[in-house]
Image 1 (cartoon, rainbow, N blue to C red):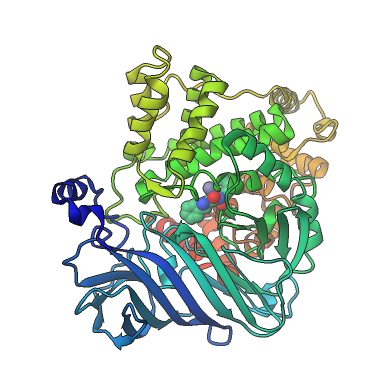
Image 2 (spheres, protein in one colour; image 1 turned 180 degrees about the vertical axis):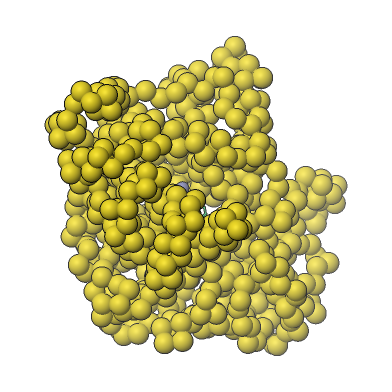
Length: 621
Ligand code: BES
Ligand code: ZN
């Protein structure tokens, strides 16, 4: 069918000139051709640690003269490529792999004699695919079955499927997945809690167009427990009851978000709890959030993670950054919405405490960032790995900007504005310019006099924090601060500190306000009263262990070793790794621990720890 652009050449010219530049983190030439649907048929082979099979891509040719399709791949073996015509007839295609780039991977170049509606690629993944982690039986809780999970964001989907790996492109997908018989497969698609498990065959469909970084799969001994009318928890059998209890408020969170920003548009919202090596806190895979088990601490104090991943169902999955330089449109908006959900479900004080902690973290991180990395709207990420460019600036400065707008315009106007933003751009990929223009037209111009252009510019395009950034405040934290001051002054016994028992956030606040170093007597007293060594709470551990390291408190080392080998969530363990690496003695200890820990780590975590090690070694001689 001819598009209006072939009918109206003038419009076509305009469309080309108005087209955003290609995403520098992908080989895809999206002005020529776009993938609109993807059909996978794959075998999950645990013995060889490979996904093997084929993918059929449906193509929307935008440039009628184009005769080449460039796909992203990383470490894939390509067996055959076939062009599939409108009648479904397949014929072999000429293809080649281009030069490999360290960040981008390897382009797969496919030649077309004439444009066909589909192309089929048979391929196999590499056992070390950057987007997959293969766990042995021993690395699971149950110890009986192996486990596989993917992590595609930002540019790792290309390591397990050849595709246009850019968030500018959206496609629907279906998948036939063949797994060893007793195991269950799940995907970021229409999982059914009642799916027949045991036959080894699973079929999935995602009928909403999604960007490639939301393509996800997991396979293992996975049980299910329902937590609400459209929610369930998936996890290894020994974990599933605990997880269902921890996440029992998920339906309440969905209802609260719908009240603010309109219907949840994805059908079910399920959560898969992964083994502890999962390198992130959570990943917003549509219909199946992937989550770290480290937030299951028994008192729901860390379930803002669910609020966050759920919020992405609007900010990110529905309205998506079109390239990674604009990730604040995903993560900043999501962190803002996350806090609104926490406030609605757990009250204002909980939201305030979480904001204070986030803002503390942002200031600390920003102190070490170059000015160009302190901007909300980053320069295009040419030659940069998007995973490395991601900081709290996108998350927390981004959320803080929206809080600023909320305060200036008031909740009724701002809430309606944000809901309008999601509605107007649903299932689209957008950049910061689109947002800035929308903001101007739908908020700033509609309510004159509430913000000045220079104030907005300071948030959007200047480094650091603007003068108009009002810090969050928490009454309960004021009490924690007072208690800490008394203890440090020797006027209070550590045993009385937690009083009526602190929440995770209050304990975190206590730790963050302590001096750089304490003496052994103080640390022993704190540990005796509050049982920090060996804590199962990673938010506490990630602040306590670095303090013990800086203070030269060797008594914590056995617990540190357990902590660093037991979990792979990057954000939790990196502060302790870095603290250790700051002294020669700590560095030697760290190297010993890393030699043991790395077998259990995800490729992403291994890369981060290795990079920190290399840097520390260079510095220390
Ligand atoms: N989408 C992110 C995770 C991500 C971002 C992976 C960029 C790879 C590249 C996810 O929604 C996220 O932000 N997770 C946070 C959780 C949080 C802020 C509550 C995490 O993993 O720590
Ligand atoms: Zn996020």
